Image 1 (cartoon, rainbow, N blue to C red):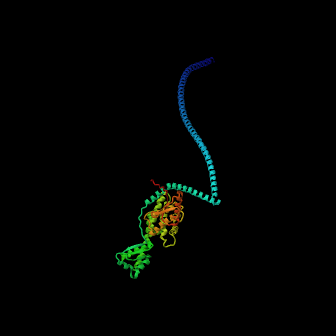
Image 2: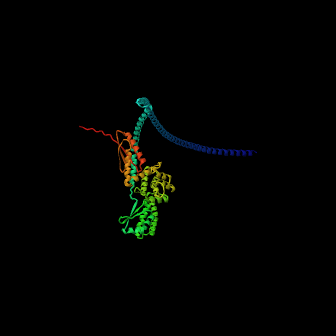
Image 3: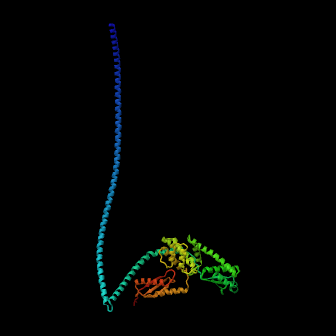
Length: 521
């Protein structure tokens, strides 16, 4: 029992010794680990401190950089804002200066208006005074007239009316002269330039023919063959062509007479072919005449086409083209109508181009203005009315019809193109050498011009000059005043327009002269 106790105690002591040794050993190990841990903690603290200090420095640098950037942006925005404020300030300053200037102008205008109002008031006062004076003068004049022996009150009123009428006519003459001078100064140069340019651009040949054609013969023996047995060849030719064949003493020539140039030309060509062929008898004559007529139908078509091609006019009805071709054999006062029509078309187109109006209308109307002359010897009616009917029948526009219808003054023109066609027609007809008149007719027209001028009161002498294109009238300066001379020229011009027929225009010039003569002795 006791041994067991001692064993147990030994075991306990041994265990205690083992435990004490283990505890001492473990204590040293623990202390060593604690020291290492403390050193590690100290190192970690130092690393953490250095890291924190580094991050603090970086944060400080970043903060300083952001502060500098923010400051720079603020300064830039401030400069821009200051610039805008300065611009606005300058604008406000300019607006203030402008307002000051306008206020000054308004003040000046107010002063001017006030001055004008005062002037108007003074003028109204003067006008009132003048009206009163005029009323007094009229009353005095009425009283004076009533006191004239042998005159009643009504007669005095009539005399006063005539005086006032003469005064009004003189004032109106002054006004008309001033307006005409101003208009002439502005428009005359332009009109002359346009018309001169149109005439300058037109260069054309002129051929004059009469109512007869002469056919040359190889010998006088041919006259007998042309006459034929008992005159049958002459009769056959006259019946086939509608012209007169004159065989007289003219050596080696016969004469074709007829008022229709188209028929006369057919007869001339047929006769020349018969003479060249040598076979002259009625059957051959009829054959040749029919062939020439067929050729002339083609020829007139070609003449019309050539005119359209020359003027560059498209889209015209074929029948109108043929009628234009017939105008090649039609003459008026010795002027070829087709050539005249082309001249009018050229002139009207040129003036229309310069005035910037419808060139095509002016050109077509100018070319077709005398188309009625192609049939006026076959159909009753004037060439003007026939032309209007033809143009409407073959589809020409109303603008062209109107411009064509006005060229003789039978209709009032409502378009510029109509006026241009009228002017172009007058230019073509009135140019020197364009037309011929019978001498007797020419002389009678000149005598009539002078007779009309001399019939007016106060006219001393009158002279028709420039082939009847101008009338110069010398008046008595004691009977006709300057203002009355203006009205006299207009009255004479109206009289000439109503009583005479003439191409183009006639200039009426009234001359009033005052002479003072004295002798030195």
